[in-house]
Amino acid sequence: MTSDRFSSPAGADLTGPATPYRMTVTTTLPHREAVALADEQLAAWLKQEGCEEPPPAPRALTGPPPAGPASTGKAPSRPEPPELTPPGLTASGPAQSRPAPVAERLRLGDRVLLDRDRGPLRGGPAAGRYDRRRLRTPTPHGTQQLTLTVATGADGPTWVRLEAETHSTGNGVRTPCRVPVPELARTLLPLLDATDGLAAVHPAPRVITAGEVDGLIDELCDPERRLPVVVASVPVNLPLDRWVEDVVRPLCHQLPGLATAYVLDPGARTGFNVALEYHSVYGGAVRTYLPEVDPASRCDGARHPVLARGRIEQDIRRAAGLLAREPRRLAADLPLPPPLAAVPVLRVAPAPPRAAVSPAGDQAAARAELAALVREEQQDRAEQQARADELERVRRTLRHERRDNRAGRENRDKQDGREGHEGRDRPELRERHDGRDSRDGHVRAGSHALTGRHCILQGAAGHFAVKPSARPAKPETFTELMARIDEFPLLTFTGDQKNALALDGLRCSGAGWARLAWDGLTALQEYAEAAVRGAAGGDFKQWCEHTPEGCHHFPPRKAVRGESRTVFSHTKWKRERMLPVPESVDASRRAFMGAHLRIGGGRTAPRLHYLDDCSGSGRIYVGYIGLHLTNTRTN
Image (cartoon, rainbow, N blue to C red; front, side, top):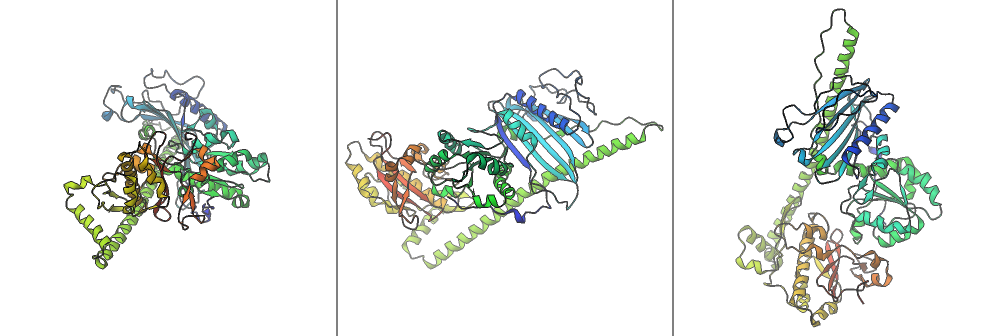
């Protein structure tokens, strides 16, 4: 299990703006029903806080205009605009000429403002629609802003986004390091039946039994998942109920809407850790599983941080803040789903001109109204400044990344220059430089008959290429393939050649199997060249799905990340896949190689099993080429 990798917030700067809260989930409810439910909960919260209850929102754009304020609600302080879109524009008008809808502004108390708008998404009515509520309430040193957006695309689910942030009106004011989870999030999640991919997003941790382990693993591996999944274990010497109430619930208090939380009971813990041996959690520790979990990858296990039991019990409040840090960062960095990204910028109608006041008029009321307008302008400026600060943070991050990439390219250029100066006469370096010179000129017509290992990548990690093969054709047999396997400098074959050579003796075997295996090795070599430089963009499966231009394409359906859970839990079958590796990779000189390539079909079903250790030793170890190893479909 990965060691504790959470950093301490002791050095956090409390003088800047508080880290905002951002929740993004989907709901199975229809758009109108989700908006009505959100309005109901927002009105209930306002009433509980002693504010005026807002009147019902106007009907949809396609419906008739509202007749007037509802009899059960208080009228807004400012006249409500009769239409949410400028007159003269019809639904059939071009999307380019349609201005964003104008929000209505309601004053519900002293410095309490509610802005409401709705309309079509950018792209026109056919693209979908949205409803938005922005609530501003006063704080001792500024304004707290809560924004709720419901957006539904033309052919997709309904997305709900809730943002809470604090805007300071003064310089150097100490604010909390993060905005707390809004109470509205805790009440809305169960009512909306909120989901994130396959997972239900619930406000409190849920206990997982042995029969639910398979479903939990499916959630972890779901490619559509956006939120982290937090899994807590229970110490063997403590009862489950007591640990959940005293430790897990307070620990997950800051996670509603940012992550889904589970607790493994003793029966589920064993099955979970057997199936995810590289991603296990036990002994009272809590593990955060980020999106795109790869159960078969030892290297991927280091990506998912663990919070140890000792640190939790030392200061549970501090541990709760540490646990919420990664979900908060992920919620802030993830791009918006297309429907939410198509929501236009909120536009508030300017204040209507005030009627002239007679000399004997109420001067105090005029001054109060003027002060309110000044405060509203200050709030708008504070929000604009917050957006500018966030944009500057993004620019600063991109600037640092460009500087690091430039420094990396300069170091590689210096290294290449030293190699060219010191070892120009060495055969391997001369071959590398000859390959680069040929790319700068032209590629000979006969190069298309080579193996395809001529891959040029341009990206954040720089410009590099994989050395083209000196052999003119792919091998026709596995005997020839094994004789030429040293042509792949970043691949090491550690298995028994007899299994591969035996494939040549099968009657159903042909040159197709050997050529397909060679294609797989070629793609693995190109992937390894990119991975050791940090330019692969994911694992080998993702590389096959998004092969860079100029690289050899291997069918993604033939690249398998890992074996099934049945193979994981079967001792004999798992032992067959414990294949040789150097002692520097594993002290036992054996490693589980669940990742494999399909190089044939039918009952024989040849396979190529490998271990991706590019992030460790910088190599890929091929431990087996031969007939399909034992599983439920083999005899």
